Image 1 (tube, rainbow, N blue to C red):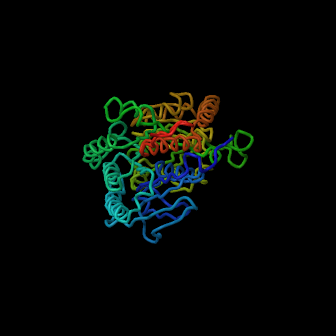
Image 2: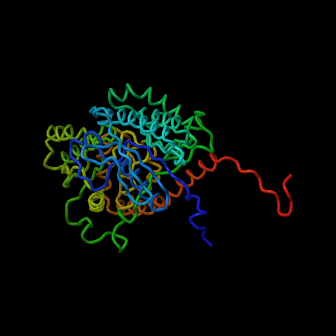
Image 3: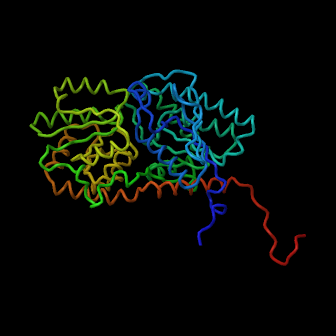
Length: 442
């Protein structure tokens, strides 16, 4: 017989989620705002996890930056509340991360907010702090400060490790990699639980002696399978199926940032178009390097063959994905990548680079072709191979759809809920043992 909500592990659980990587769904986003905070896989994963946990009955307070015109608080539903902080400093644009200033200023506002919570005694309502960390030092630093101020157990999700995954592409990245690695070590050592996306990062943390096996957990990204799966006939709905008579479409979907390898995709497109490839290249997304992309397309003389769709809402991304002939993920560093999961779910063949956990996600070639990073000729050759072999493309797509089933969002989120439960159980004060029936306590 299922336990009641009162007996459920989530009963009484209140997660304080801290992240600069969040945006309110349904809000119109300008290109200027997307330059500072491009919407990528990390933002989508945090949003989806928050929504799924709320559906599972978990109470949450989510603290993220407030933009002009946004309210200071939003109630998502009866369980989840958003607290929006006004950063005291304007964002500073950089090539590697357009929102570096936003991260720092949000962190300062967050520390002040935490102090206010502590002084008012409100910190006791939170069962666990959950900070979402990137490869930059600031989220690791502010996670440790929040834990110290609020005196609550800390769980980290390391979406991109500076120690294991990140390879700096710009001057800013090279300057920040040292502090990022330092603060990552500090935060991982102090956190009551560390969530990583792949087994290889867990093994690296254990090998470095940063934590013990009981405190580091593998919880991969998840995907809403129903949003990206083909139509009810288990292939593709007629209005979304690629037309066999139409020219093939090669899709890039992601942020325009150096680490995403968009420039390698453009160079590969130039190689294929120069060799007489009869198809179209489609790029969707936004970011602080979109203008560089336009310049590169003009220099190669292929701007009329590459469609720049800009930022797309989630339903539009799903439709675009299902219409693609092949999806290319040319990342220069990546631990997992939400686009890969979405493409696999849509039963599209993929071409990915041999970085981070991408080979593991695609089954080391079972669901896609793998090429070296920063190698446009190899990327072009793999795209040509998939497009030239319909049987191969179909086999890869089918294998991808089967692999994607293991990343169902609800199942993945329940694993995260298990991490919260373990943390809060360990932090709970020990209860005195009850005397056996019929035996009085001395």
